[in-house]
Image (cartoon, rainbow, N blue to C red; front, side, top):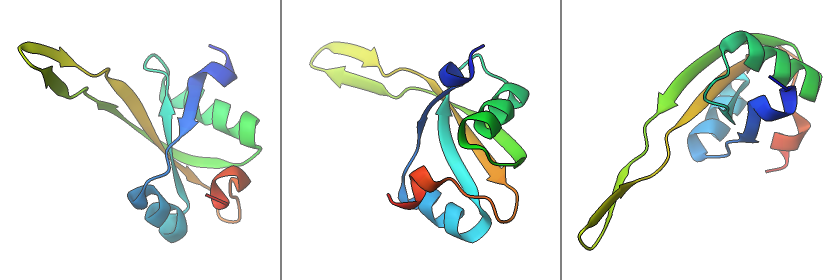
Length: 95
């Protein structure tokens, strides 16, 4: 899988900002078919950092309702990437 297609976007939330400041962890939305090894390789090559640990989780889409019609948002995969001490992703620092 191509590195640019593995990482979809960086997640910027209150929880991710606290984790980034406290323990150098970054949150990403990644492709559902990507595994930990592919995610770590893609992060290292795209942002030129050293990845220490990758944790992944499946986020199930919530059920939504409009009148009588019940639908569901899409499911996606989240990756929590821990970087080595001294490394940071500058793209996420200014947000």
